[in-house]
Length: 156
Image 1: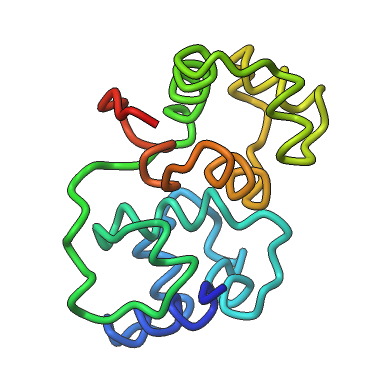
Image 2 (image 1 turned 135 degrees about the vertical axis):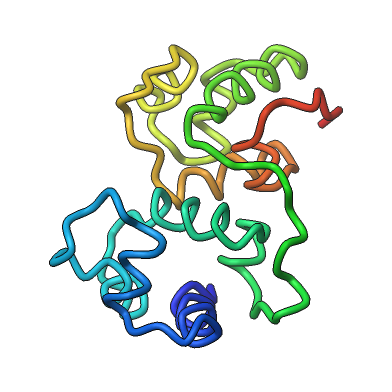
């Protein structure tokens, strides 16, 4: 994963300190939370909500932000805004369209049946972990961006 390196690259590209980057990207958090420092140093157990904010702010693919070194050419390529809440209807649609059972998904992804059930029930307060999103996107053969964007009714 290239999370730390890519965040540092974007911060340096904007010529920002970690604190300034925090204020620019995460204005809704307390100034003293040191989000950028923690992301650059791998200190978050589930950085997904913060990564979505960064991807949306810079209009870059969430998949690219996580899995490959990004460059200036990657910026402003993804116009759609990603949001955690889009995951639930997309997950349900793909499950239904492909006739997957909750048990099938849980067994393949090694995610507990309880967690998969909560995803299918649209438990919005139930946090999606980065590693779970990765397992589900691999199983469904789709990108993070597709799972976290308004549905385009892609054929999986």
